[in-house]
Image (cartoon, rainbow, N blue to C red; front, side, top):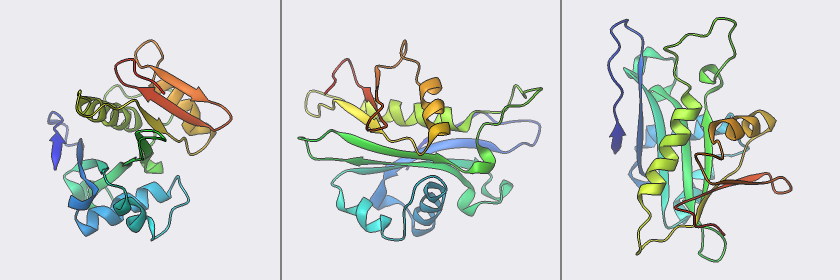
Length: 185
């Protein structure tokens, strides 16, 4: 499993790291943890494992607390994403991304400067990893992201500013397309 380490915190607060690997490489406990997180935002069931296993290239992304027992969630998983490949004639990748409700960004009157925005960090990590896979042998056009609701829609619009990311949003389909290197559908 590939990891992106976070600096240690001297205040005893839990630290968080992002990980990714092929879906088939996930342990059973991690598969269940990521499924439970995604169920908080998407109507998925136990058959999701079969669905995600059917696609030729499914990548799992996990945002995990360090140490895992510092949060009251299975395996310390506070967020996750599943990125599935689709046949070339449709589009390249479809992503489902979710953060556990207890760790989603909350507006505070006095915001804490050290609080990470878990959704943004996971979303940018997913984009960076998928972008790094672009090559002449593996041309990807875009990553499709389906928002779970209006709050998620506002989050994506804010977390992916169009001056930094080549984002297109189809309001009828309610799907975002984030292009790689200027290549779009």
